[in-house]
Image 1: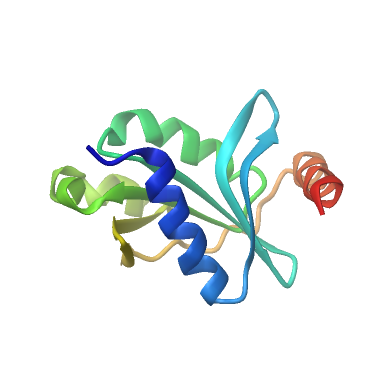
Image 2: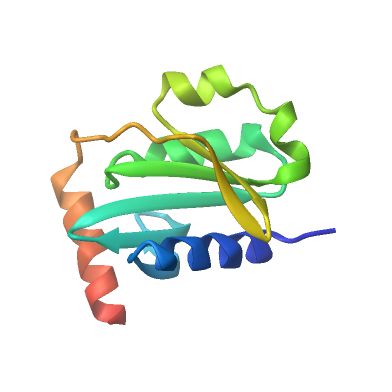
Length: 129
């Protein structure tokens, strides 16, 4: 069985090829985001699960507080079980991972960020750099 860590590693490589700087397991508020990618001050948050879309939904919705784009990444075999309309309604993108990453649903850009949470995230990333 594939792991979430493997999915995150595949997505990290995909984002880096697009010129993003990536950070795994970034602390935000009371939790951690699986992957944060930054390019030109645009933050993309990615949460990964093998197949459980119901668990990931609250996580990705919270990411909208501080990220301009948000994606949920799943192992490719389980994408067909995910109700795309729920993710589309909330502007959350979907990624299918099978070594390669395919964008199933593009994330809608979010410009209504919570400024102080966004700034705390930036400080956390600067601390790591």
